[in-house]
Picture (cartoon, rainbow, N blue to C red):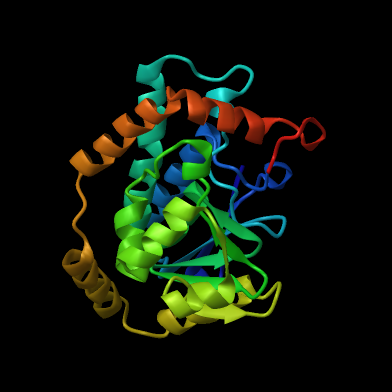
Length: 261
């Protein structure tokens, strides 16, 4: 479910694509594991100077696959669920701390956990038709994976609350105005825009660029494993809330039955 290709000068740019278009690149255990393996390999690859994260099929990622937790055959053991949820937090931490410069190329939507991955990158390039959407509260869930601190650093407290509490869709122009998107391209041009940024990075002295990234991250980051673990504990509490269970059941039903709002 993960496709990794090399491109750019001396193949110094890695394009990591989520390849699950039939589910709008929703994140299940297999996708999270595949991304983790890909980023761990790239972390130790000194020939790679920049990493682009994208999704195939014209959609970045629809976020966590709710059927993993509420659908047929869903995990019911809270201990296993906790470990599964924590894996997403570890993935975002790994992505944020890659030595290479990272760029998210966003077509379609960056939804929930998909946006969590995007804000773990150094930069975000959005197509003009793309959007960011945080539906967790509407589904009776909190927003985990340490995404809220990252989102707040980018857009500020008020905008972060607007996005995470009101569950509105925010287009690329608004995301750029708020500081969430670093560049907006024409529809279908997000990957090309991300590649242009990556190739600009590749022309710079690698050690200096990576050192500046680490310094900026150290100044801006106030995250720890305790924060991530608390998020996951709260997620388990939310999953047992009757209102949230009903909301997620309505969301996962086919449209013909009144679901997928």
